[in-house]
Length: 150
Image (tube, rainbow, N blue to C red):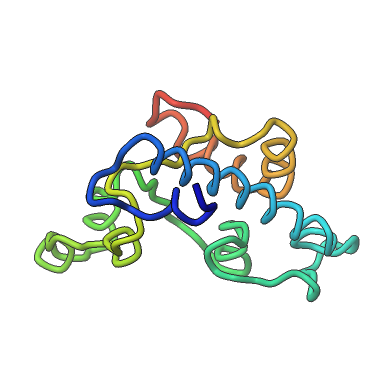
């Protein structure tokens, strides 16, 4: 089989197709963490933002969004309806169905294939180091609301 063929959806999410995406996810996580580590992480040794690290909003530690703000309320994703209610966003503003365009693309599986179990122990240790403040924030405000721990 040609390497690219295992990523082509043949109109159903067969196991070979999903296994290809699991492998892709695992390798992507390893590569992503390696790239962050190779430039010295998100922060430089003095504790400030590392200009050598690409600061994409999807991957930076979420704690960075709170720095410098007087935060009086933090909500957890698992209780998003309560969060939106607490910050006064009326239900008609968020009760519509939304779709993720990327996941609806023909090359993406319909089934979820990402899993923490696919991340190597070495990569997981590095992730927990890079996102230590996020993990602390989660454990402080959200962990009691969930059965699953990081």
